[in-house]
Length: 450
Ligand code: NDP
Ligand code: 2IT
Image (cartoon, rainbow, N blue to C red; front, top):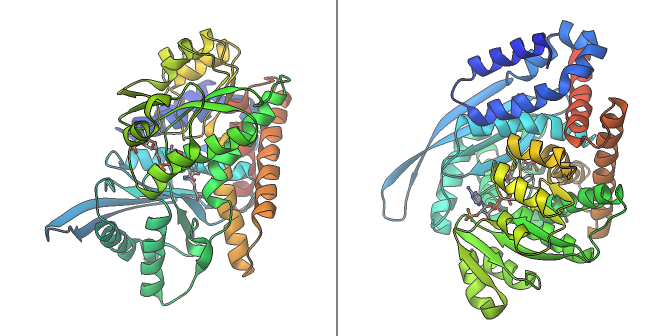
């Protein structure tokens, strides 16, 4: 990193004290940008990076709601509208007890570059709450979502800010949020939220998009080394939206996913996971992986509190796809994967690999795809949902999936070509950061100092 960039990063860290995840995301981007700023002094002259690191608007609000026992509960709501140079703020909402402003800022910052990489007209933002949907009744979730939207609606709009799901926010929550927005504004403004139900403005393939897209990206990346998913053995961490559809696409491409996880444990099915059963338990019953293992009997080995990546030392693994949460794959796990012949690690989640893990993997020659490139299929398909809403149209599954695949291959190739152009072939982190940054930076410069 140049001295100028180091000074600038120090300033960002100082101005955003106590936000370690945001620091981590910013540092990774700064680490990549030296060469592009050296080649284009106008980026420094226009203070593009300083502006990029300062969200356009940050909203923090109280969310009061009443639980089923009649007690008043208070949560905190966030929306960080980070950058709208390329389009309306776009990014998911996360409901999880660990959510802080720093979490939302890291996710919003990543989202700027991710959305730019899709080539679609979407800016970057993120939101959420420290509300924990686990163990809550549908009625409690509804009351929480209604209260959350009663405050947030004034900041949203199909041309302003368009949220979607993330951890803890799926079709049920988007339905309640959309209903309250519609009620308050008296507008059927379909394009104000994405991830809607298929019968009322949603897009086919949005549910599958992040997991499918990550595997399409991985497949393209493996092909650069003459490999594929056919016959591959794969680990997918998590067992939520992204994990489930990553598993499905790996299976469709002829691979076997032998394990997945949740925050309580790991299931290891040496001959491959039963996806129908997994979906029934997670999507229909909102159950735990321990329930899956109970239903699967001897075909499944459940390890409470286990570490999914340690399985690479026990059985052959070709590809690892972390799809749970940030910093879930650290240096030790990376060493286990690298020393046991894993060919590729592909981030389905946002920033699941620690900086040390990324260093270990790349030093060992393991292909590594950063989340902002590999998991962009979700938000890209959200933009396709907005496109369908704007034209009052509904595409077929096959057409939407073909658009997704085309976008993912495009992102892969843009990252790979950018890495080549900057003398770092195979460095997808550098390629993603520079390609995403350039698109946003050029738009910001064109629009003047705003
Ligand atoms: P879900 O809520 O559907 O699933 C999250 C999964 O990750 C669950 O299995 C959950 O287990 C597990 N998990 C969450 N936190 C932890 C933790 N601290 N330790 C271990 N496991 C954990 O979320 P998504 O699948 O939508 O999101 C997963 C990741 O993908 C996130 O990083 C998200 O930001 C990212 N992402 C999501 C997109 C989307 O379209 N949904 C798009 C792009 C990225 P448990 O049930 O026990 O909590
Ligand atoms: O991290 C992400 O890209 C998402 N959670 C999806 C965002 C979206 O607007 O579809």
